[in-house]
Every structure is written in C-alpha cells, then in structure tokens.
Amino acid sequence: MAEAAVPSVRRSLELRSPGIWAILVVLVAAFSLLAPGFLSGGNIANIGRQSSILLIIALPMTLIILTEGLDLSMGALMALASMGIALVSAAGYPVPVAILTGLAIGLAGGLFNGLLVAKLAIPPFVGTLGTLGIAHGLAVVLTDGQSVVDIADAIPDFFGSRVLGIPAPVLVAAAAYLATHFLLYRTQFGVAIFALGGNREAWTLAGGRVCRCLVAVYAFGGLMVGLAGFLFTARMSAGHPTASLGMEFDALAAVALGGTSFERGDGWLFGTLLGVLAIGILRNGLNLLGFPSSMQVISIGLMVLLALFLDGLRRKP
Image (tube, rainbow, N blue to C red):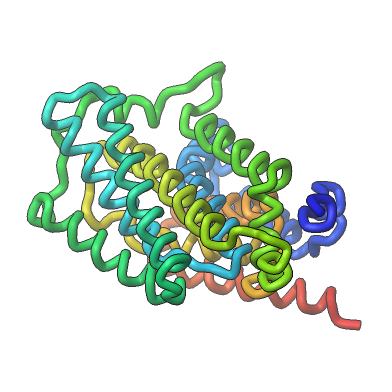
C-alpha cells in the first residue's frame, strides 16, 4: 500500500514539468547580467538566509495542501511565536526557553487548526482564517502593537552565524527539509497524507484514521511555524507583531511553483524547495535593482502564473 500511495523520488522527478527549472535558469541568468554582485558569495549566502524562513513554512504547507487542506494562519502564528520568543527573552530567561516558548505557541496554534478542521469539520479556509484573526489580535495586544527589541544578543547573532562556512539558518532549513522528506516518503504518516488527498473515501474504508492524520498534519505545520518564528525573530533582531503577516501567501506561491496540485493530492516536496529558491532569487534580485516591495509581490504572482502556464502547455496533447 505504501508503494502505491507514496511516489518514489525518481518517479516524482520524471513526472514534474520543466517550468520551474526554466524560471530558475532565466532568473539567475537575468540577475547575473543586470544586478552587480548577484553571484557574490555574500549575496548567495544572503539568499539562503532569507529563503530559509520561507522554506520552513512552505514544507508543512505542502503536506497540508496534499490533504486538500489549507492554512492561512501561518504568518500570524509566526508573528505570535516571535512575540512570545522576544518577550520571554526580554524577561531574562535563557534562549532555549525562549525557543521552546515559540515552538509551543506554534504547536498550540497548529493543534487548534487541526481540531477545527478534523473534529469540527470546519472548512480549512474558514477555520484557519479565524485562527489568523485570533493570532494576529493576540500578537498585537501583547505589547499594544509595539515591537520587542530588548532580546538576548545570541538570538540575532545566530542568524548571521556560520557552521563550517554555511549560514546557520540554511542548516536549520536543510534539517527541516530532510525531516519533512523522511516523514512524507518513508513513513506511514506520509502514506496517509497522500491517501487523504488522493482518495480519502477509500482510505477511510480501509481503516485509515482521517481525524488523527489531519490533526497531526496541522500540528506539524504549527511546530514548523514556531521554528520559523525563531529565525524570523533572529532576522529582525526583535519580536514584531505584524511583519510576518502574509508569509503564508509566499508559501502557497512556492508550493504552486513547485508543481503540487491543490486538488488531486499530488505533490513534490523538492519542487517546493525549488519554488522557495525562485521566490528568494526574485526578491533578492529586485532588491539589488532597487525595485519596491510592491513590485516584488506583483512579480511573484506573475511568476506563479507563468509556471502554471508552462506546465499546462506541456500537459496538452
């Protein structure tokens, strides 16, 4: 059953369209010519650091989409986790305690989403939209909308640190990718995820525990959001109640760019990684060229549509 439900990595590579690869090649070539310093070691490391946060939330978003679900609360939960981390650190507690606080906040939010979707049968769009509002409100109320900047130096120092020459956030994101890949392709949990999106009725008739799997998927997403909240706090050198709002849409864009279907339970985790890289490269290149953030958002939307168009052309008989 596992072999039927979970596609092999090799088969996944063969099935995916070249759209995202073509976009990556064009982006790298264009910015190499137009943006001085784009290919410098420092800038490549910067792309890796900035992309690490998005990858950590795009990975569980892929799993949630595979179950035909959706999580619109990730950006708000990340802000709430970031505020929790910053407040605990500002109170003088050790950094590990602050990190655990962020993870606990993210996990609690994910469990809440899972219970809404699985136990109460609330549509994912509606349920996670409600969680978005609750998390955003709590993040703002905690400090009357003010940032928390009095945090331990070790937190922002981590974002700029390196291990064996590799930026620490990149290593964290790589570990998150490997863990998610293992869960999706090497465990019964992954089998259940593909089954829920591919044929939920058959999975239920075969004795599959739909409720438990859905709760676990959203809880995993919340835990990863808590981890991303730590990296976000380190990047901002502060806890900010609103700065991460909307990151869930970048995560959805990365998932779409990577070729994961939003309605068939068909996905490609490595494709999500490529989608994150495409968004990171696009944002970085446009920053180097002096384009405003609004233009970056428009460009990401156009890039997603282009990738879907190229994939559609390939599938036409």
